[in-house]
Length: 502
Image 1 (cartoon, helix red, strand yellow):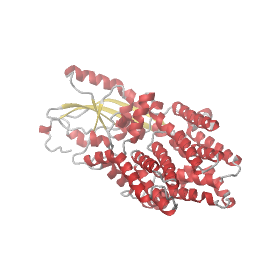
Image 2 (spheres, helix red, strand yellow):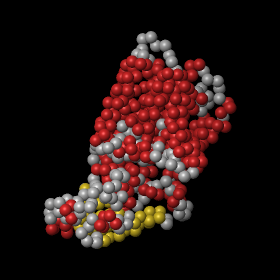
Image 3 (cartoon, helix red, strand yellow):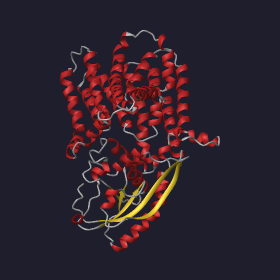
Image 4 (cartoon, one colour):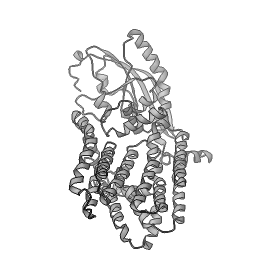
């Protein structure tokens, strides 16, 4: 137990060190989630509110620096490994096998790469593992508290990511196909409604938010899954299957395939656990497979498949020598570490790192670029406030990327960020949904920052041609530049813009 805690703590500390020493900032989605955490609500355009609440708690505890934003999301992975260890012990596995399962999870590329970022997968994997443990107890004991815990885990998971809804298929399928006579336990048809009601009660605030905003989250989810189409079906299928291999890890997967023919017969006592492993992995795998045949399927959409795979590997190796596989796990941790620290390795070798080999490429340079614009922004606000001290500090962002990175980089300035919507355009992101720039009764000054000049529709809404205040070009990676432009103008009043209809 102590050794397990030391390994989990050591890996997490190393990954925290990597985050602070790779000279990269937040990825655009991470920056957007941070913005959400500063404006807590029961829902957002593309995700439920769980990740925003997690970041809000994290920054309250650890500050709003890079590691402060990521801390609790990163801690979800060792916590998931710890829960997995307790669940495997409850399944009936020996301490050594349960410990191996926890280490197998924390050593996967999924935990090693996703564990460096703030993603909705962090709380989702934790809730999925808790739900799997509760499901096992429901099947084994069927007590009221187990049904309640099942509903709570599913509900909280759904408030993190709608992928948790697939657990309903897992739970119902397992309970119907792995029956057990429990004369003193709560029956399926009495316990299941309790779990469903608790899960829906957790999700109800988000559903109410969606209903009041025109169901944007569900519409966005449908758009990127059912509504999307693939340009090359075989290519997207290959990417998805390759991604599944990366979930568990290429070294562990290859080792398992090589030794597959040596698998011992399934012990009668393990049959229910094997059945649960299959139901934990199969539904989401098939959903992702179907999606990849229709459009591009991101492998992290099916990340909870990993929990079922870990259970299956542990059951397969139960009672066998683990020395060889521990060596494979160590090699896999080092391999993932080399990927995440490729920039440091390239620097030591005095060789430039290619962009496609740098997992941090898209996260570099944004905060320094915005900080180069800071003097021009502050000078503009000083001039405007000299004319009108009551004028709010507003910034119109050119797109979601600019607003997300800009909001985090200028968090100490605390401007109000606005988004521009084309006339008659449906909202394309959370900023266009909640903070669109709209004409007032009187003309108003506009400060615009984007990856280029203001678009035609915005120019048409200005009283006169905008003035460019500053330009920044910053090399993000060799051959790839961040280009930002700062413009000022005056938005005409609503009475002078009758044709403008957001």
